[in-house]
Amino acid sequence: MTGRNILFLAVWLQSVLHAQLRRPPHIVLIVADDLGWNDVGWHNSQMYTPNLNKLAQNGVILNSSYVQPVCTPTRSSLLTGYYPYHVGLQHNVLHSSRPGHLYKNFTLLSQKLKELEYVTHMVGKWHLGFCNWNYTPTYRGFDSFLGMYSGAEDYYTHVTGYSPHSGYDFRFNKSVYYEVKGEYSANVFARRAIDIINSVNPKKESLFLYVPFQSVHEPVQVPKKYEDIYSHIQNKTRRTYCGMVSALDEAIGNITDALTHRGYMDNLLLIFTSDNGGPVNHGANNWPLRGSKNTLWEGGTKGAAFVYSKTLLKKTKYVNTEMFHVVDWFPTLLSVAGGRSDPGLDGIDQWPTIQSGAPSKRSNFVYNIDEIMKNAAIRVGDYKLIEGKPGTHNGWYPAPNNHRKHFRNQTTFHDIGALEYQLFNIKSDPTEHFNLAKKLPDVLKKLQLYLQEFKKTLVPAFYPPGDPKSNPKYYNGTWSPGWC
Ligand SMILES: *[C@@H]1O[C@H](CO)[C@@H](O)[C@H](O)[C@H]1NC(C)=O
Ligand SMILES: *[C@@H]1O[C@H](CO)[C@@H](O)[C@H](O)[C@H]1NC(C)=O
Ligand SMILES: *[C@@H]1O[C@H](CO)[C@@H](O)[C@H](O)[C@H]1NC(C)=O
Ligand SMILES: *[C@@H]1O[C@H](CO)[C@@H](O)[C@H](O)[C@H]1NC(C)=O
Ligand SMILES: *[C@@H]1O[C@H](CO)[C@@H](O)[C@H](O)[C@H]1NC(C)=O
Ligand SMILES: *[C@@H]1O[C@H](CO)[C@@H](O)[C@H](O)[C@H]1NC(C)=O
Ligand SMILES: *[C@@H]1O[C@H](CO)[C@@H](O)[C@H](O)[C@H]1NC(C)=O
Image 1: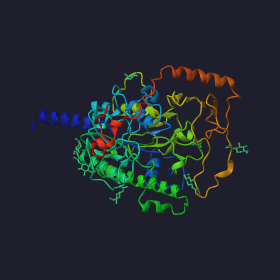
Image 2: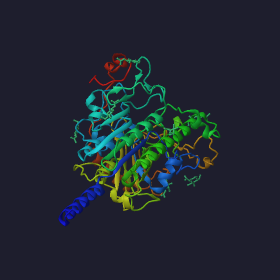
Image 3: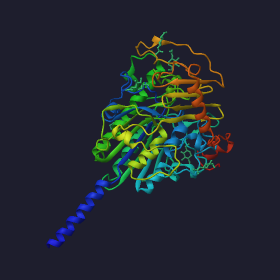
């Protein structure tokens, strides 16, 4: 070989190595369903979540990471970067028989990452509409999909709905997938995620893996061995629920083991977040936060969340309290991937905050605006304004008999009128005990003006009535696209 050839070879090698170094990081986005604030090991030492704890404690625990009060809206924000009230999904969730869906004109994170040559896979719960194939995951930027279209179903039979409108809801890509009938979904999803991890070459391709688990949404079901971890908890619902959390933890441990063995960890960002607060009527717990899933209280909207990366974070092993909202993931992840988001998004690129603890670029956010429920909440600085009834579970709920002195403050609360305003200082009163609406009229006025301004851009809720054409009886007993 001549000196000139060697030089060429060296230059070529260098450029190949450089391209390798610059390869966009793998992104693994894990969503837990209906997980309460007090249902993870780093907030509650009685929870057995060793795998999650290890990731959280070696990563960055997000302590002011807000989500929507229920499932569908959070998923819409996560994948579009817009608040639900800008995409018409601010009211309730999509029920299987309703033809509502995420409008096609919004470009999803999966589609954006595909443009950046990511391989994109989804495993788990969709819950963004399925009445037409065009609204389903493999038409929305995902190379493959294994999971359920609806919001809730039996963890083993994968049947959802009540007779005579019940049906099987489990798919692999577009096909109904019967092979997993009888198997607990956390195991099915972990196995599929691992298959994907093993099928991609992490040195040659960038992976976007979106894993919105069914766990730990009701129905409250789990294999006995996980429930047995909590034999000291007498309340059956709580005991089973806690078991579900530990099964989820094991599934995530299996996924991260596969990521390690397959060599992803040198260039990977893992995000874990709940989709909303825990439903206290189904065994979840948000103590000491007020309220439940499906309320505008902190207990319904302050998510348990963390990020983990071995190589991409400049500051780790601490609790980050900077203001973050689920709409921010879209531009943040896109920026990590080397892409750009379109102007006008509600989300803000918060990578400096996540990566090195820089101050949040966000000083306010919208908890939700629901013109059908006639309620809304916003945050401006330390203050939170709630308009109307925040929901149906308005108290503070200690975890059922887990032997903690939780009853120290059983403050009573009155039923809140439909047009009433409440004002809280979340910084000094994160548990929302002291309504300041009367005490601070100027702050109240200021936040009311903010809310008026936010409301001007509301896209009406897309919440059509159920359609009998959706009935699984027309589709061999399965929930299927094709009726809108
Ligand atoms: C998408 O379509 C909806 C419904 O037609 C509309 O309200 C919204 O403004 C559109 N959004 C964008 C980003 O084009
Ligand atoms: C689903 O699609 C992926 C990607 O195209 C493919 O690898 C997988 O085999 C498909 N699964 C089934 C059951 O067809
Ligand atoms: C995790 O992996 C182990 C070993 O393969 C397996 O026995 C277990 O069922 C898996 N757990 C889940 C929840 O997938
Ligand atoms: C057990 O917990 C559930 C949900 O957290 C609650 O609704 C129920 O009342 C509790 N049961 C008893 C006997 O305390
Ligand atoms: C608990 O109750 C006492 C009096 O009953 C009150 O002074 C205190 O501020 C309350 N603490 C919280 C966190 O609400
Ligand atoms: C995290 O949030 C909780 C609940 O609002 C609060 O009690 C706690 O002090 C926060 N932690 C830090 C480090 O700010
Ligand atoms: C119809 O459903 C049954 C299970 O209920 C399944 O075994 C069968 O393969 C399905 N038929 C078709 C054509 O998909």
